[in-house]
Each structure stands twice: as C-alpha cells, then as structure tokens.
Length: 345
Image 1: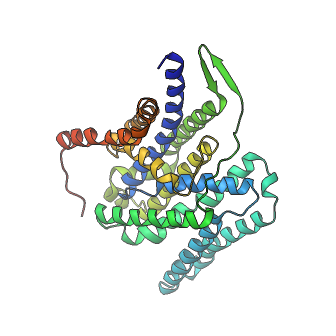
Image 2: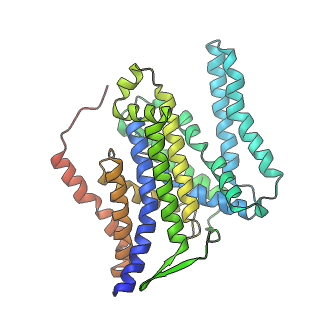
Image 3: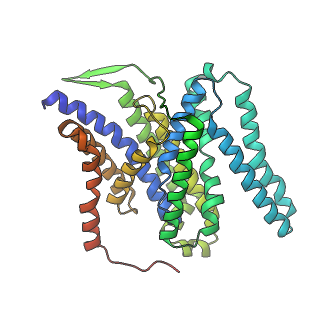
C-alpha cells in the first residue's frame, strides 16, 4: 500500500459510496413513509442497468412487458372498484394511466431505432420504463396491506424481491451486461489519476441529492411526504392521502434505483441478481442512520463504500463479510441507546 494505491482505492470507495448513499436515502424514505423495509430496492438498480443495455442493443427490454402486465392488472382492479362505488368518471383516468400510457410507450419503442438514439434519450426511455414499476408494485402488493405490522411488510418485501429476481432472470438471462463508458476523460492531480467516469457518477449523485432536497423543501408533494414520514396519523388528519404518499415514495425510490443502475452500468458488469448485494450495502448505510436520518444514512453509505474499497485490497475474499459485519456494532449501539416505542395501532 502506497499513496497512489490509497488514492485509487479512495476514488473507488467514494464512487461506490455515492451510489450506496442514493440507495440508502431511498430506503429511509420508503420506510419512514410506509414502514416497508424495501428489500427489492436493488432490483430497480439491476433493471435500470439491464434495460439501458437492452435499448443500446436495439432490443425491447423485458421490463416493458412487466410494466404492461402490472398496469393491466392494476387498471382492472381499480376499474372494478370504481364500478362498485359507482364512480364511473374515474374509469377513463384509470385506464389512461395504467393501460394507455404503457401501451403508447411500447408502441414508441417498437417503432424507433433504439440503438442509434443518443445516450440522453436512451436514459430517459429507461427511466420511463422502470420508474412506473415502483408505484404499480405499491398499488398491487403493499397498498392492500398498508396497515399490517412491520414484520408482515418485511416478509412481503422479501417475496417481492424473490419474484423480481426471477423475472429478471427470465427477461435478461443469466449473462451480465455492461454499457459503454459515458466519458473517457481522465485528469491527473498530483500522483492520482482521476477518471472522468468517477467524477460523473459523483456529480450526478450529488445533483440528484440536491434535487431531492429541493423536492422535499419546496414542493407541496415533497412536504406531504415529509409530513407523512413524521406522523402518519397527523398527516391523514390534515387531509394527506396515505395511498398517494405511498405511491409517491415508491416512485422516488424506483427513480433513485434506476438512476443508480444507469450510473454504475459502465463501471461494472450487472447481472439479473446483482442488485441484491448493491441494495444490501445501501441498507447498511440506512441502518447507520437508524432508518430515519437522511444525513446519517448518506454518511454511513459513503463509509460503507470506503470500507469495501480498502477491504478489497487487504482481504478481497472477505470484503463482503467485513462490510456486512459493520451492521452488528451499529445495531448493538442503537439497541442500548434507543428507547423502545410501541408500533402505532
């Protein structure tokens, strides 16, 4: 280990930590708003990367068919409820959002030269396919059991993770994919060579974090999510829909996951099940923040990235063990210092 190696490892650690920070923020958001420990967060990372890779090869991604399928089921269920409640005026909006938009997106993707599109357009199309999966999963899986205990919600989240992993294998196959680098630029600072890809990932992550801060501080929807996270009962009494808050939090989590997958797709080969480990490392960062503090979760995620990077040099065979062992002293410390409160009825 010398200074140059230490700087290279630190660069990798900060790059990975920036991605883990985004995922930890998404996990904290979903948990504080819905009480769901969102284990499938990593699947959105894999879906984002693999969907972009499919578009760049000119192939319609399997996630598009998943979007159409989930939208069809959600549209049928909501239509039945609207008919039962004699709210016929809701039916066009329900069918438009859940059926017409996914089908229009499928028609667009089927009739344009996907592989020759510019990278920004491909990224936007990837987000358009993957992000709507978040609120649809909430509508079909978690909304009907929104008042269940945290343990039940966790078990269901694990089931969703297993299902999405299997669908990922079916859609994309067992072979991994890697997208071309966004930039080949590099900068020499002293003894360290800084890759432009690293700077791009960190800058994009910071930009998204700032955008999330502005969303929560300056928009009505963001303030509604903050209110629901602070006090769900009080938010409902003030007229904030718990269903709307749940769908919105899952939408933001899906956006963060898909965007993170796009960012790391040129750095590492992504397989259908790669998102699980990536999401777990974001979860470790969220645990450092107590699943309630955004700054602590982000700081913990960066620490996880640095620990993983330096562990890969000293003990590469045990780097995953070292990273996940970090969660033990954090949990012990929190169990000794945090006062227990009964779950809301």
